[in-house]
Image (cartoon, each protein chain N blue to C red):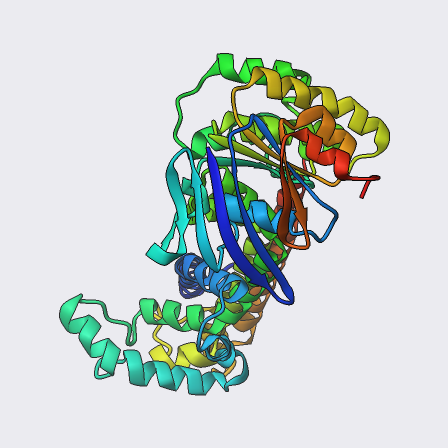
Amino acid sequence: MFELSPTEWTAIELSLRVATVATLVAAPLGIAVAWLLARRDFWGKSLLDALIHLPLVLPPVVTGYLLLLTFGRRGLVGAWLADHLGIVFAFRWTGAALACGVMSFPLLVRPIRLSIEAVDQRLEQAAGTLGAAPLRVFLTVTLPLALPGVLTGMVLGFAKAIGEFGATITFVSNIPGETQTISSAIYSLIQTPDGDSAALRLVVVSVVIALAALVGSEWFARRATKRLHGN
Amino acid sequence: MLRVDIAKQLGEFHIEARFASEGRVTGLFGASGAGKTSLINMIAGLLRPDRGTIAVDGEVLDDTAAGLHVPVHRRRIGYVFQDARLFPHLDVRQNLDYGRRMNRLAEDAAARARITDLLDISHLLGRRPGHLSGGERQRVALGRALLAQPRLLLLDEPLGSLDEQRRVEILPYLVRLRDEASIPMIYVSHDPDEMRQLATNIVLLKRGRVAAFGGIEVLTAIPSPA
């Protein structure tokens, strides 16, 4: 019998929400950073590059703890955001989204950067001679031509976000209905005496989501590439 | 209409050019490596001179002493590149329309019809650049530059990447353009025959310097194709 309990549904719904919000908020930022890294030379560029990749090499628990120190209720940024804007990350699903966004950021940025680097700068020059200001050159030439990479980056980021565990559980704990994603629900279930079958069901669900994301991205990227080359 | 007085150091290569041109088609002539492309890139605003001034129709576009540099997208100078550089993600119609959209010009179906007829590209409007021949691509690039309504058109060896047969096919369009469109042009080439057919005056460039300037009789000093 493959029937999901309300708690399991809640975890799935929360995971999807957290990963979607994390990806959608991180994408514009990721595109901007990817463009900076691909097209601009500035002081501290390698530092920025290293900083973005840090979550990839740090133990997730360290990233989570750093997020707690920074964005927690008494953290430097967290206290300011709570007092001035009323935004609270600690032990909320928004905090889970933040943790997932940070952890998936390097995976999001890399394909976008590579695809922007691959866009022929001579086309951007041509757009300039036709009267397009730099931002419009980016929106009408660079971005459409880099679209397959943008989609790949977003799907990779989403897949990473949906599976994120270490940083999330460290930063926002494991509260059912608020911060308990599929991963942390599985973790809880395999520690309870008869949680095996429930854990297994969630494992199947996460495999299905991951596969759907990969197949979907492949399909999108192929379509986008086709459109670009007009076949 | 065009006044150029600039100097630019590019690695080991030094360009120092000074000329003024009133003609309909100014031929920028010289062997490859003479600095022709760098010079028109400076006129287009893609490259910034180290020192000097560039002015079109009395409007100063570069004046290094005054720290003035009008960015490329505000110069209204059209550019036809040797390699066409059509946007691969747009069809011919959208490529032709690009400059009009970027300059927020009103739609002008008559102007577009006139230019697509002149260049014989009306039947290509729905195609993507990947499905055009080299000659067709270059004609679309020409139309795209013209429809942005530039005040000056730069042509950087527009026939350079085409074989002999295609050249003969495109050249008449350029002659028609010269005679029917009222846009002054700077035509870059190292081919004296093209120059004789198109140019009304000649700037002869040698190793980054203007070696001669005048009517097409300047070309008679050239013994053989460079």
